[in-house]
Image (cartoon, rainbow over the protein chains, first blue to last red):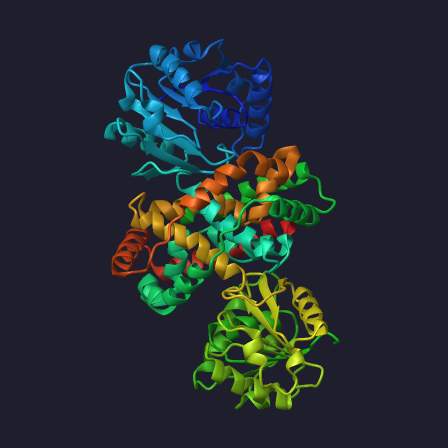
Length: 308
Length: 308
């Protein structure tokens, strides 16, 4: 596969619009389709905002001129050499879209899905050329957060996986390769694991929701923006690295593992989390918080990038 | 309790030296004791490095003049109005030190322990005035990471807890209050929960250690430097907040929870993690990595501070 120049974006909600912003920022052309009448207005406004916040100055009008909205998925795929599908998480719907995409996209094109919940083997089942299908799951918002989880299905070719990893890396993403299909991929499972214990501690009344959140942000969270859990523990082991760390603190971690909680999101938990997070937010507006977060994310990336 | 002016540091290894740096940077006086002959040289060098890297310019010689090394814990505690104990994690040793501290420290002083593994009720058992004892567990390195987990034992007074929370906040820490004693406190349990699933995914061969680490750093880790897990999900719910999020994605999280792994740190896991992390590190020096991380942490804190 030569590097794609024209990307079909199928489904232009928040994820699709953010992918479009990224592809446009990298100088690629984008052909979009979405059944909603408001999708084009929404996407163009999203792109303007995302690109005007980008560090390198971009000609917004020129970038918008590389974005085209087409009436159907087939028309969007026509002339594209890579597709990124971002439709709602329904297998039947996504399968129908994949059929429309592969009917008109370039023979050499990779067809990627942003799905967080469906398995690639199920999705590619029924495709004419299933070997060129992958999951390319981004982390929200894709134009800011570098992670893309690349997972092939049983019928995906090794070449497709290698090409997709190369392409995502070339446009500045940090792709990772999942060798097995697994529910939640990797990042959402890790997020779920952390949140499960956070919910357990809240439900058990060990601390307030606000204090549990602060225990992450003011402690390990700051390090996780720079290093993953294994490298963190490797450094914690000093000259002896992770071997020494596990030798010394492995038993403590195993004893904590044995005691971690298994909460349920029942009515009691929901009320407690809802009230707790509202107390944490206080008088701050959600929109302000989201904006501060995105601004801070951009700054964080400058410092964290060299480390991963 | 009026704000402490003179702090006794009992045990001047890495944690004690980092606490000393923080207290000195805040203009307080520090009285240290440690049985090792090298402790003073080590601590003074640590303080010089930590303070010369601090943003606000500090007179190093003046700061060092506020640091005194004494021969015994009792002498270090004499004249102090707050104690921070950082001895090895042995209950008998810590109890002996607490007895020496309380014999000579000011009547109004709080006696805090940095313990990560012992329970305050066990530690204060046998003290003359157990009501003034707390755990004040920092996150390493304490002079950089804001978190302090404050936990009282059965005999700790409410006043002691309130005063400790106030004092730590006054010197720029982010103290959180644990209402119950629990193994691993909060942050290490959350860290253990995340690492457990990371080990599971590595052992199951879902991805390389390096890619699993990247899944954190390039994805949720960047957000956890800014917001804890609950606030993150609250924002993910849009206008409907965490209620809408749980209504929509709660079942998906519960299904992931049910599937999270329970690995063991057996010989196979240790070899795999050790080889994986060495591949991740490659030719980079651990000392360089640690230095880059600490430098980046200082920069991150500038951007994350307003959010928690």
